[in-house]
Image (cartoon, rainbow over all chains, first blue to last red; front, side, top):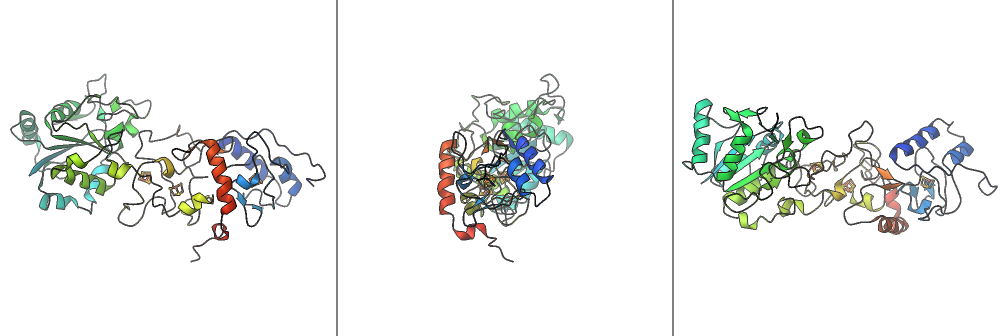
Length: 89
Length: 320
Ligand code: SF4
Ligand code: SF4
Ligand code: SF4
């Protein structure tokens, strides 16, 4: 889906934990198997993003050995060079 | 024999409770083994009424030598600087504090309220509370910046909400047995022996901190409490994981974040609903980073730690 150019909502990046919680809330309201919805709301891109070149690899939810996003609201397979706006370290 | 007097200002008695739980040495050991004579203490003192007043006056006049004055709780100055909201033995407590501090060899501020003002001094601070020598991070306390007790030391600050019992008794023994010179103090006048290392030193979750495995609920056995639950272990000076509580455990070992109670800023944040026990972030990065680490370094470190993370870091190693 991402390779096919799925447009996702990369902005605004949640500036603080309150805005972060708001995105999580939005995700929780989606049906569990709505993969496309999850990708859009969390603003996925398949390359590093932002001035610090943020990547899933540095994100605290990224499980290196499983190549998996451990954020309960996402729980999707991801690559180390990807990024989403729930990035957090 | 060292005479010790203990008074309480704007306090909840938590430090007294803590003190009575001391084990190494215990409160009784102070008396029987280390020659500390407890002249009076709010929970242990025998004197009442006129006799107590007389004893306090005898300390001030020098008839009774006062070696150690321990103060627990904030110095209450309301209303309008009179201190009348906290009267004790016939007058404002703050007046006793001033006069007793002036004649004592050593003055010990015990707990956050006595050290930095603590919870009573939180804005809007209607009781006009201050610590003995500090108000939060500044030397804005009751006795003034230049205060030195008769032995030439400033107030010895033993913070904590409450202070761990053994921090208290060990310092009292040190002072009473003539080793005050060995008690090095940090910039906030805390004994370095306890307050140079961090709460994180000895925390059983250190490897989860290194590999960024987060605990998301209180009491979880796996995971570090820094990333989601606002643990202040990496920036709080305390030996809570070296000198365990009840000889058994600590907050972080039990799955509860450190709230940084030994630091002058405690209690932290604006205390608005949803901000306590939540890691505050700015653009995805924790607002307060471990002491001495900057944002760039933190991001680099994270990449390296993640890349090096062993398989087991992703598993629950506590199988039973
Ligand atoms: S939260 Fe986003 S950035 Fe972090 S690992 Fe998951 S997908 Fe990647
Ligand atoms: S941040 Fe807290 S829980 Fe994590 S290792 Fe440090 S002290 Fe332990
Ligand atoms: S773990 Fe932190 S909050 Fe708890 S007593 Fe120690 S310093 Fe205070």
